[in-house]
Length: 289
Image (cartoon, rainbow, N blue to C red; front, side):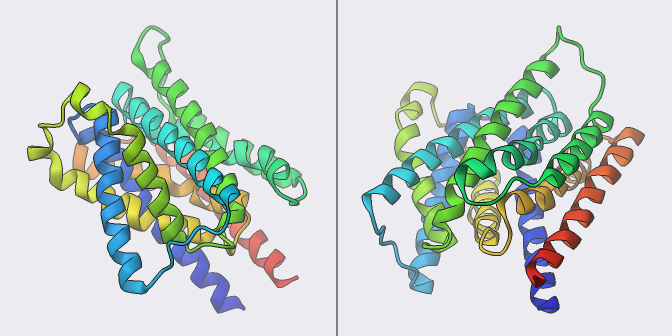
């Protein structure tokens, strides 16, 4: 049991690192945001289709209700990605990722409305610690510049991500994580396709290596692994453990975009990591019961 729990925590951490690449890639790729999301979805759909065929993962959807859930969850995922990328473009990787990571608070509050999970006041406390960490990590904001807009887009992105995660919590018990992610990106590819002739997509000729990285590492691998982790953790537990994403994202942005973190970054990062350790220990003890 101990080794199994540690393995699940390890794989969730790996998924977190892969998803963390979205900050630097989203900031760096020079294309209209809906076009970026379409290419991201289209490439990811192709990669996931090949993987599912290779692994003989079923594409069958059991009920019409599940089909509706897939569509709605995909729309929330698309809204999450688009608003998140606007947050990155308007501000920087740190502000975009940190404002997004208020989503564990949204999940902790909303999860009892989506499932039979009882409300756990500890998650509110851990969410508050995350918010305090974000307060230290974020720079001073001027309401006259784009930073505030970036934060607001990040908060909206967090809300959409929380809803999408909670909707898939029940589905992950019935479907393989790759199947769930495949249908979401296929639906997004269809919904966003009309944006291509309007906004133009010629820039893909120079941006495709980075878009493929976004589709493969962040989407096909990272998000699929995160969805699969919901089999072993409550949504609120997985999201709080995943709160290390801003830390990894800031490190990646420093290495590749030369965005230099401040001392406040280390203080805030320590607070966020503390919630990961606390929740990891708590989820382990709950699993043993």
